[in-house]
Length: 419
Image 1 (cartoon, helix red, strand yellow):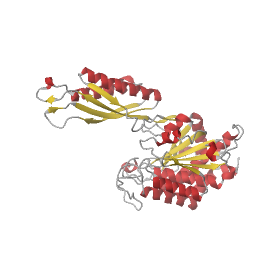
Image 2: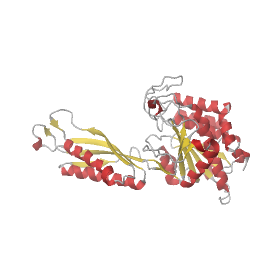
Image 3: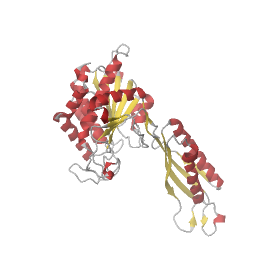
Image 4: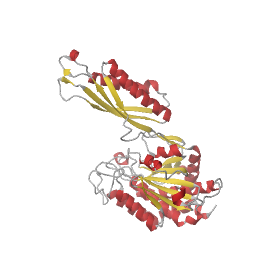
């Protein structure tokens, strides 16, 4: 095996001031200028500018603001590395030199760090491009936060020849230098629903002359709780939460209708689809029991449901080998507890084998509220960046080395025709 693929060498390069300080500067620039899903125009420009400086070819625009870069031979095999790049619609409450300059927008999920670390991996790989046995495809993806940017990337066709993809997420609760992953489901599938329950309005003093949608909706909500407590296997974790209830505007008038809405989540596609089917049946059925009628909308036209994120078992073995060799066995949790949160990385896994893992960026001096993703008080430890960049580069390069021997004869075309 070439010395290029000695994993400690990757980490040493990522920790060098040239790479480390550069990654931090990029992250802070993006952090100061957060952009929401499919609006990441300045972020995309920063990425393309850095790729241009490294002489890394790319495709743009993909999925509106996405950037797809290429390092290596331009020929098979192809392996993907993904970073999302959108921010959240929330006000940053952390007072520091690089606080968000855009009111009501913040990188509270670490996507600014994800971009910086993938660019760091690109720099490492580009420096040793002649030794890469295939092509690393750099996926800078828009709109992870609810809008399914990964689905748009796939629909563009740019990943059709990619045979595996890796992605990471910062974990503020995990110490720097530690990582976590698992084979099988690591994140839940997530869907939304909204229902309108129609009755007949009337005076609250004469309920017999009305058809009360509030009572019907209340029974709907109670009945939905039985989906998890009485229909789901206790060992198959699922969630149904009604988080919205809107009906009526005064104390003595029964309204004509009520609107409820919520989310449902599961770790298998079968359980996820079963929940979806039963949610609709229960809402319509319980409404009918109370002489109301109901319509159910799963809101897929606005934002797609996310499938469960399920890690490939062979890629899990590959991840554990790479991470243990780089970090040491005590720094790698290879059987993390799955999270009920969702990720659109799952769309890639429906197309090809994929692996998603957690990267420690904990600041031990922070309070628990500051260690939570999607918190306006989120602060991350930038000392974790070299580990993310080195793992990205190592996972991709060693994957290509392993799979090069299994590839058929190389094609004649390069980057833009192959991928």
